Image 1: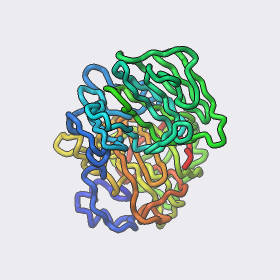
Image 2: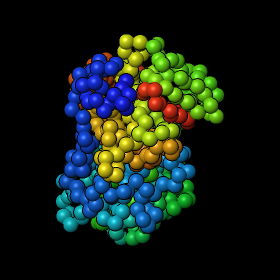
Image 3: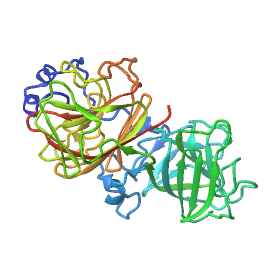
Image 4: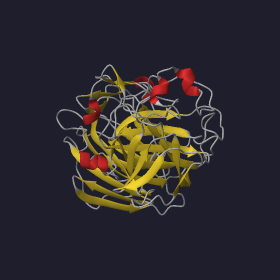
Length: 432
């Protein structure tokens, strides 16, 4: 929440908007703008979002270790819902016992389950199981509805019976270095996308290396899970953005500056940016438009409020924070993590609430933000909490409308109770 102390909020929303807020009030979103149905049309799930799924399933599936989370890995599939995915056809996708399945009962229903977010360079890990004689694949950097795998995507095939491009091939592009057979059992892929270069491991063994030398190599796109015949299942879908670079050197505030009028105290201690007191903002010299941004943060108090602004206009004393805000506030209502008190950590403040509050006060957490044109997605400790597209008319000021052009990052000191630290701030810009 921008520019309002926790005490002030107790006196109501009118007081909140009277302090340093140039934006017109809008109705707070009590839940993400995309429901389970709208995120993935024609899908069903067997568990509600109210389950405590952030740690993964009890059997260890769909779970990241604390070390992997700190290293930047995120879960594309939470193990319970299809949040962050959508179907591109009438094919029904569902979740059963921590596994994504496609309804293969009708032969005419084929298609992809597509990630709502696009990614450029990354590592991708997943497990799959396809029936003997089945036909499936994972589409990399794909369009929503690809027509030709030689042009519209990189199709990693899972089909032993394919006459030319069998399992572990990139269809219409290259075959693996050895025969790979995967029908009938669970197997794992580990894919690395780095510019035009693609490296593929099958069950831990490298089986393919490909460099796209065509005139138009694909630079970004969605991830698509395919059902093209027979039963197919997926689990343990994890992604790590590749190529992020430090936005903070861990030693000084070089590359950052105080916004005029700031009352917050910003300093460097033990490799972290310490933020005390407020109201105030520490703004990056660097600007970015489309990017993946990751960071660690800790709130050293109960229900403390802060945020990271992005695509922000240059801050002034009169208008210090005209940007989108990645909210940091761990309060919940009635002990229910699906009911954030103040939009919740990972929310886009005043636009869409976090569907769950995953992080806790006085404990380090890792945040991830993917900004891709008007689409914004956030993860906390590897769990996706926001999937939102800004459909407002364009405006230079994100408080007033959609902004896709580059802007600054800004760390917020919220009020006199502020006591928060940031570390490992890193970003990589991505293609439009």
